[in-house]
Length: 538
Image 1 (tube, rainbow, N blue to C red):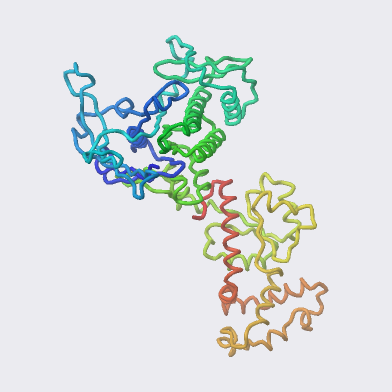
Image 2 (tube, rainbow, N blue to C red):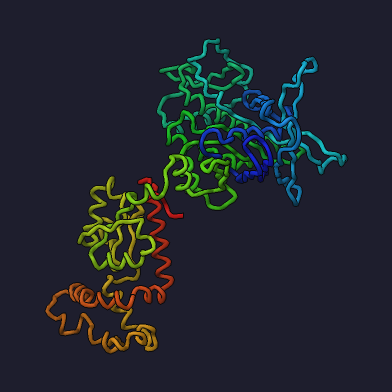
């Protein structure tokens, strides 16, 4: 498994580290930050001899840097070390350090000048009897798909040659796999009759034939996708047949430059999902570059640990190249769009609907540290009425948060499925309304509680709180409903709540309830933020 690429001095890279995910690595950032160069260096480090297997299009599993990128005699080093790759061999306890050096060589023995720019490995092979450093590549399959894959067939003046010699590699199950994933990713209902394999300008791939058009009429997006699917299938077939080899499987590198090019956002996500599932199951690594905020947001959400998926974000925002490992989506979005939190966040707040002013008072105290991230709507509606808004107009109201009182039970109603369906409904702590929650807290205080000792001079005591029971005190007897009695009690005592900072004590005495509510709020907030392009919590 490839762990890291360390570049000490190569082009824009000065003492930089790129960390690779066990399954997927997405390299993102602005143009001219060296993203594609990283793919070339990684791919150049390894190759698989053809005797072990080739791609569906009869190509060797390798990526030669000099065939992918041009060297500059003016700006590139003449010779010397540039960095190293850390690779974890499954049979070794510690990673191998594969040194990297540059050199200029002749293309052929007849060439007069050294115009071939190469990056060579230099390392000691622990499985060799020699203790000298070697320049041989790691015996691992790698393949690089660059932007040359995007050249549309219809715009090429050369004759397209239909290749038949590699058609035999596609079995019926291979074709079924290709058709299924092709149609799923592009959301196509077309009937696919067959695939025509072709070669043009050293590019080999396949195009689909349907009753309405043939492979020459495929769009750039269709052509791009088929090349990536061919490469995925090539790795699947190679890994599936590897049990017949004497050597252990050492992984592989699937490298794609600008994976999002020519694909619509939904197709981008489905393709990334497929690559993730295949590379994880068949034990190879996928590394790609992207400018797609949709892909970055999706991977940011999909990350469950620091190892499986890696996002390496390249930025020159501060005039030098900086590589951010697994930054927040908000950071990437702001850098990509050349915006910032302070320009956007004042108007980008999530709206919160609650039942009444008492609930809003409680919410604002429980979520005081996030007050610049939400806006409480001044409205008075019961819990079921709020759910009716979401039920009748989900297109709009799924983009707001609903915080219902803790005693609200919607399970017997037709709205019972809404919280799970839209993930934007939260309940206040406890199983009571805000007013009853606070009253029950006050009359349950231990005799030595800080509230009772600190505010005894102001007349606060357990006797006083019990005398002011909203349900039995004559002061509230003219109210018919218990809820009305509690509300008036709350209004009468709100100044006292503020003066003694009641919620500070409640939070200290109910840490688990408080943490659970905050966590629930942040989780639901981030879901709604994802729908509305509002910055999320980290």
